[in-house]
Image (tube, rainbow, N blue to C red; front, top):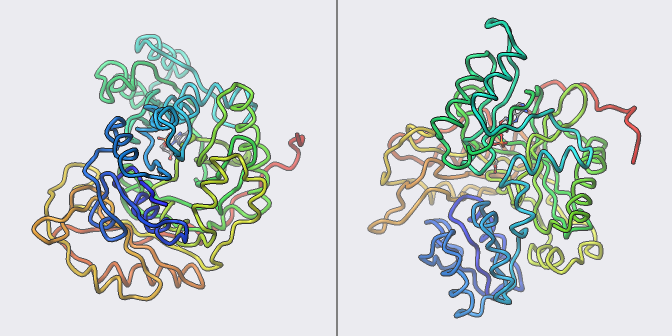
Length: 442
Ligand code: AMP
Ligand code: GLY
């Protein structure tokens, strides 16, 4: 079977790499792909948002399965369009993708399904929202623990975590008056700020059955010790011991099951990968957000460890047969992914710098270098994006995996290349307080 992967990041390189290993796959195409995906299959010069172009390509090339990487095309209805053209495609429908496409939709669904999440208020008008903040926090000096979020997709940037009153007033101004995130800021929410460690809990679901993946952790801040500006994610590892088996069971029962049921009841069944961004608070795990696709960079360590044929997993999800699939098989080792980024990221950065040492890094055992913002220019691999590579390694212990990943990182160089040095160190933090035991079971 010929397979098409839509997207051009590290997640899509990992997907193409994994799909290629399936005995059922004869050829992998990636639209538009990057320098790394070109080694797993054939890059096609069609952008991820060109739905008509993608359908035409799939029809003309007998594509048996299309796997959608990023959220943009999902929210735009790529899955509905492929299905209307009688093409087999993996991902949620446009209606179900609203879980990520509209934070208001997501929060209202969570409230309705009684899933633990921060309290929130919806606004359209910046004056009303600022009045709300001033009424609730009359003193300028008190802590204002709120988060202001643009409703729509904003490439991970439409969320502003506040501490002081002026931060909140300024966030409202940026989202709703200055429209820094465009139409995503037409509506917005103000929600309570939660504190704790974050975990990424991903699951495949066919709309009824849920197959949980092992817990992972991302590193969203640019600098070591979780400081500096937010990024798309500077590294990830899996499994994350901060979520033990008992807590995974709790999260499945109290978060994923009610969500999947609520979506089904509202006739918008969710089929695909559901990714819960969870905050492990003192009152137990709470949902920060849902994503409707694999996480990037969580996908890289997860797929490094997955031993089950990914085509079987994807097809069982599409066909509503997850119940019959049986347990997923995992490499028992730990996986760590270190993102190497361009100088200046997450701000502006220079492109076109030649990347050297990729072959040396690839020669290190149990290492895979996944590409994100790369391209081939005059036969050289160059950087084209902020997040450039996801250097991923397996190890018998987490520290062995970390060491192996950083050994590979040291081989790779280009002017301005940098990475965080502490990916996976969070696993060594003291455990958080346990989850609530007194909550009634459903
Ligand atoms: P999102 O774009 O919704 O994924 O949010 C991005 C990041 O903002 C999350 O990974 C958290 O670090 C942070 N965040 C979102 N909501 C909250 C909240 N209610 N409290 C604290 N941090 C939050
Ligand atoms: N790792 C965060 C995301 O994929 O949105």
